[in-house]
Image 1: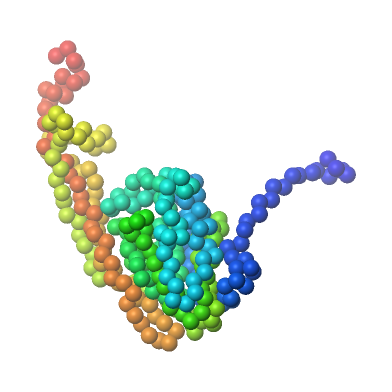
Image 2 (image 1 turned 180 degrees about the horizontal axis):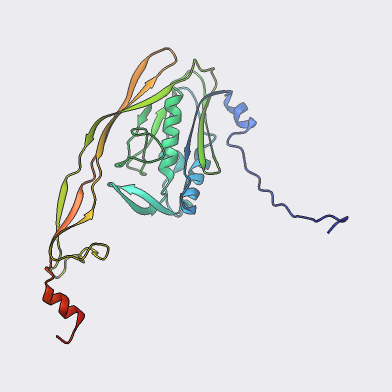
Length: 283
């Protein structure tokens, strides 16, 4: 107690700005062309770490007129050596553990920001599944040395990327050296819904084959087929952009394949006698 009052220590954490006045002076940029925000509430600490690390790498990137931006070139490989951590990522329609999970949310946020700024990607590929943090058809993915995200500064002035993480949100802004002519807006249309099919998987039971599927979470079986994975529909999606001058253009047509139902068949038949023997090993 000091002077009759309680004394409380306050921990202050300084957060660097996404873009500084020195950056603005260096790039001669002053106009906000567009900004886009995605949420990642519910993500674990590793995924948030990967998002924050990628954000730090791209924020402040300056593009002169005609210059192309490459996400893989700026961020580099998502490895443990580079500071990235293990987190879930999408591979072939499945969520699997991998180093750098979460980085694609940064790519996706940047993709939407450049679209709203009136720019278009020169290289972009969607995920194999829809993601929950943007509308259908507005996602982008990367994989070092295989899949990149690129766009070109097609304006007559410099552009700068300003990115920051705040709370459970990620915001990326495109700042330019020329005053924007107006606002762009995005919309999507689901052209087709693709129904899942059913795939049958044989029960492995031969020496040297893979272990049989884990049936512990399935109902008691008496032979026949059981669902290992429920299918999900796929989608064909169009994304459109409306410009400030009344023009409308189709940005992309993406196909998200249906996720088929997986069924295991030829399970060993469990008879009444088998059940009784299992309960009484002396029989």
